[in-house]
Amino acid sequence: MMSENIDLYWFSCTGNTLLVAREMAEVLQDKGFKVVMLMMERPETGRIELDHAIGLAFPVACQFTFPLVWDFVRGLPKADGTEVFMVDTLQGFSGGVVGPRRKLLAGRGYKPVGAREIIMPSSYYPRRLDGEKTAREVDRGLEKARCYASDLADGISRWRSVPLLSTPCTACPAGLGSGRP
Image (cartoon, rainbow, N blue to C red; front, top):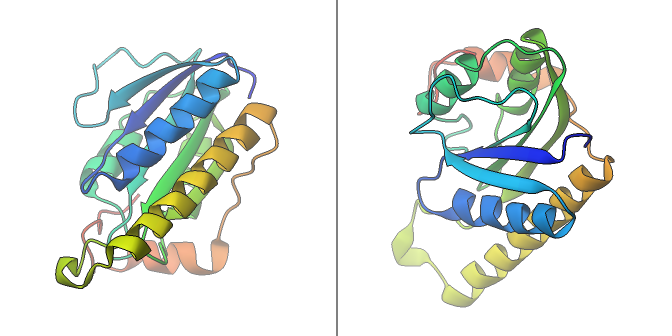
């Protein structure tokens, strides 16, 4: 990344996304970046700094994300090359998240520099959780977050589109984040 300032906007339901965002912020700070973590639920309107890189961290549920996240991304001001990256946390497959976010942001003048999906423990079946298994999943997820943050800092991360599945999955009305991009 070129910008030394990063505003990392996050939304977390179970805490998994917040863990990942904090881990990434720590790595980026260790590499010399100035990182400010901001809640998506409480953005300070008009305070989006387009000369800072923007990070987006959010959960995926039922192969979508939440309307709050879509609304936040759609509400970002138009940019002229502002770097943006995203990370989502999920249990398995996201479907209509990565590609549509890239398309939306690039169309608004942002420069997508990285996207990563990180598997974290499920919150669907809390009675079936195995403490040791959960700890291993968290450790693996945080290691992936550290590697991703390092790749971002070194300018080697990528944000690829997923054209075969993104558009049909985004159009599907099922799920918590059924709001279209």
